[in-house]
Length: 414
Image (cartoon, rainbow, N blue to C red; front, side, top):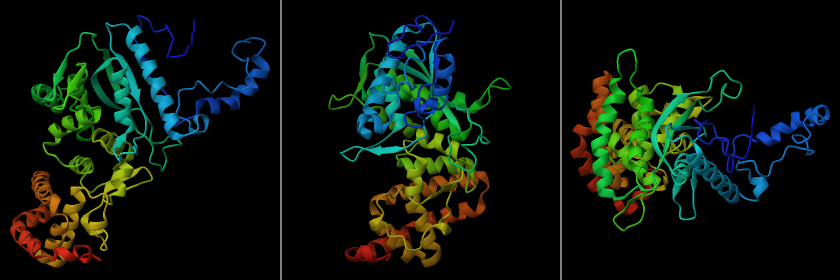
């Protein structure tokens, strides 16, 4: 017998195995779409199912989507969605069969928002936070190719290609509180083994995780450590945020402190080099790195259109670039502008660039080393040579930077 009920209050899932695909934030207005069919079905089926067709149109106020026009503002719509989603997930955590995990599909296209304090966050972090507040502990975050490239919405568009399956179990009421130091120590114990298992695979039974998916998959064991505790406390006693936990997990995988955009570029380059890849895969990787494809594109290092994504090579970077006015300047961009100008103007020109991005100088040098090693192993001789030239000329570039006229720095690239 088919049953339905409000996910925030239903008891249908009591002692059941639950796998759910929740509403997609503001992507699709199902209730509005349903009106097209509802008005015709009501004419013929109202005598048969009077309770289902009691209203003139489909009820919409309770629908758990972030629709601005229903709630008056984007902020109120988001609060409605997150509050309702947390309640629904908490209900699942309390009623689902404790012997089996609950699987939740996350299939929102990644985007970035900023609060009044200027802090940037992503839908992925916000949704994870709702899952944890509901009383779940995460034990896995697996990317799955759930969307066809050939579907009508995906042809020639930057459409979603993957869902993330969150594997969840109810967090015990007796969960402890730990310090950041203890959390980091446990990450260092758990993640090497998890990473080794993911990259090795196991014969014909289990293939290794693809490099583009590894950043997403490694979040699972990392968040398993974070979410099994009632809280992880920072040095000042405040609870660690999901955003910080994700940064620490990503730092382990990347083995560096590069900004989010650079980490995305680095791991994308590792799999694709300068070749094209699918937008859906880029969206999955960006989500894991705490950024978005559109955000990386805005920084000026990425082409993304028509469902295709590729990194821009340094020769494609704009010649009128001014680092002083660049409000989104990842280390990846700084390095490749440095290469572009070094090839055209030598050490003196590169020195001007380095002087203008002095705060990123050490990270730029580290990234050049990292990319040289990567290109050498992959057999990409031309790229390896470009990074090696920067490394071998670094001292001379630094000397030129020290001699650059800092007082007129803003005019150097005009």
